[in-house]
Every structure is written in C-alpha cells, then in structure tokens.
Amino acid sequence: MNETLADVSIILPMYNAELWLDECLQSVFEQDFGGCMELSVYNDASKDRSAQIIEEWRPRLEERGIHLIVGGHESHQPRGVGFAKNQAISQSSGCFLCFLDSDDVMMSQRVRKQYEAAIQHPTSIVGCQVKREPAGATERYTRWINGLTHEQLVTQVFTSHGPTVIMPTWFVSREWYCHVGQFVEDGTGTPEDLLFFYEHLRKDGGVHRVNECLLQYRYHEKAATHSVSEETIWKHRVNFLEERVLRHWASFTIWNAGKQGRKLYRSLAPSTRNKVMAFCDVDKKKISKGFYTYEDSEERPKPKIPVIRYQDAKPPFIICVKLDLTGGGFEENLKSLNLKEGVDFYHFN
Image (cartoon, rainbow, N blue to C red; front, side, top):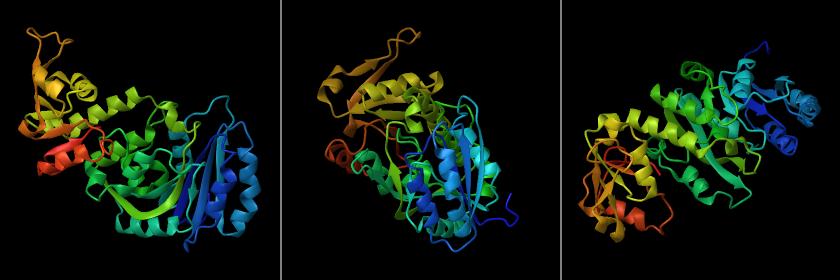
C-alpha cells in the first residue's frame, strides 16, 4: 500500500487484455493531472501476456510518479468484472476513483478535468463524452451518450442503453463508493455497472457529465458487455421502473401498442398492470383493432386494454418507442404534446 494517500486511483480490472494494454497504459502515462496519482490493476486470471506487459510498464509509470499496485489470482476461471473492480479498489488508496477498461484509451486531460468536476459534485458519478473506436460502431448509442441534457442524465436511466454515463468514464469519490456499496460479484452475465448505478440513484446520488470527449471507447466482440443477456437487463429495468416511478402513479398509458409495449405490460407486477389505462400508437392498424387482450391472464374475463391514438391518450406515459429511428417523426409527435420529461413521461425504449 502506498504510504501517502493518492488524490486519484485509476481502477483497472484486467482480463486477457494484451491486444490493447500498451495503448491503454500509454494514455495513463500521458495524463496531465498535477496531483498524486496511482494505478491499481487487478488481474482476473489472464492467460495471455497481460501481466508481463504491466510489469514492463512499471519503471516508466513509477518514474513518471504514478504508483503502480498490481493484484490478481491465477485460478482456471476469471471471477468476473465486479469482483476485479472491487479488488482493484480495495488495494488502492486514492480519495477519488477513476474507472478505466483495459481496452479503452483516455485523453491526456481526462483525470484532471473529471477530478475538478468530482470535487464540485462529491455525491455524483461523473462521466464524460466519448468517441467510439472503430468510428461509426454503435452510432445511435454514442449519440445518446454524448447528447443527453443535464436533466436527461437522471430521467433516461430506464432505457435499454443502461447507465446514462457509461462505466468506463466513471469518476467518483471513494467515500461515495463506500456509501453505495461494492459492485455485485455474481460473475459473467451480471450487469454489475447497471446494478451499482441503480443503487447509487436509490441513495440519492447525482449524475454529472463533463461535456468534453475524454475517452476513446472501444467496441469489439470480446467485450464483457456482450456476456449479459437482454432478458437479465430487461428484468432489472422493469423492477427499477416500478420501484422508482410506477408505484407513485395511480394510472398511466404505455406509448407503443406493438411488441415492446405489450412485453412491458406483460412484465409488470399484477398490481402495476392494473394501472395501465391504455396503449397509444400512430399505427392505424393497431388502433383500428380497438384493444389488446392479455391472453396469458388468469383473470376471467381476460383484461382488454384500449388502443388509442397518441393525441387522444392521457399522460403520464411510459414510452416504449426507440429514439432516433423514425427520422424525427416520433420526436415531433412527442414534442407536439408539450409534456415534461420526468413528470409526464419516461422513456423505457
């Protein structure tokens, strides 16, 4: 353990990262932060040259004044990203934690700019804007990450995109991390960042973003994100939506009478399902049917939910329409109703 407490610990969980590690570590080396910085690496049973590459970098990092702490295990199987993050944090000493994925690259001003923001927002997760590598990968997602307004960082937490500031950009005080609690350690297939983010919001944590591109966020097939099933994330999202929003509403409308809207309806707890007044849509075919029958219901007669035009529907709405896909058509329709996001509607797309 470093004798002097660092201002910032860069938290780097590592598993078979040899392809990207040099570039990642170079970006740590090039940080222009003037305070005391350390790099805490936890090697989650890598089978490639990752551990050697880290040791090759040790003299350069130490010479630059960046204290290097390396932990790890050599079991047959990795213990998962949540475990590796928790271990990297527990072996570190910094007052602030700067999360970094081993396949990503930081801009040289990242630590300095986020440190300044985190001091101003001590109970927030501070993120930043990103550029995608390769350029053009997950274009809609990248636009969403970079384009959310300050208010939407809090209102759009229920969408399928996940946390409104993405995990590899997180910067947070150690004190606040300890207050929220550790990452879930259930191994592969667990959305540990999403679960931490939800717990953070439950404890009234804020969300803040430095509106500059401070990270190159790499997209590739081996990324841990791909191991989490959509169904797992769906269940967590529905539960969180019910807990945070729907239990406070006496009734509501689901905007989208198609597949996603009906799936949300069926996924709700029975008491919440009873609060659905109607589905609304723009599709004349769906509207002309007049209602949706919940065939799987054990109630007799089976519930029939009206399907109406969006102009005739009453707020509040849960919107199950994907953004940025209809050439602005959906967004224009929503805007025409003069509703307030976070009061009259939430996105669950």
